[in-house]
Image (cartoon, rainbow, N blue to C red; front, side, top):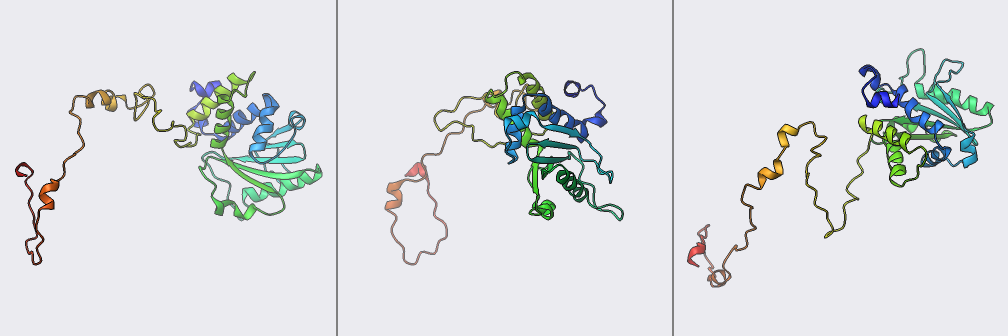
Length: 266
């Protein structure tokens, strides 16, 4: 499915479906070296051994007795981890018939975790750029681990693995998934920390955008070359004549509100 999405071979109405994104991302963690699963869980604050990661169980879209259906449950080590993933949609709100989606999943997930003698962990993964505290505050500090994260954090996770060459046999798989996440614009702004110290800047031909990937080539192509046809503005170095101003007499009762200085006569 990753390749099909990268090449635009699935219906556009399915591209923004969170179920497909969930499948692509967590299938990657299921079928690749489980060191990646171990490291991703550590990123969430969950510590497991490599052996526990290798024996982890992935349960996609299981259905509880009340028909609540979380996106994924991973049973790993001492943890029963319930993932609810959102992309552009929000969690189902409370109605006259049903509780809020998160409340229902917490209730049923905790029961399932107790039955398996595991520590319950709820993970909400969304496309929000930051955690909206008011949105999740009701679920924190209730005797279980509640974690919010976003898809952008996973994109950064894969990017760092690729840059550090921490992926060997699964590098091609990781690269394709990373490209898909970038295509979906699920990459966070990382700031300008990578700019080199003063005096060691490298010349970059394209200042405002990448010419090869820009959608607006017609508007800006040749922008820098066009500017070279104009005379460069030089900094103004002479503001006043020190001798002239030093000789201005002091007036105790000066009433004129304007002083004109003609630099050519100084």
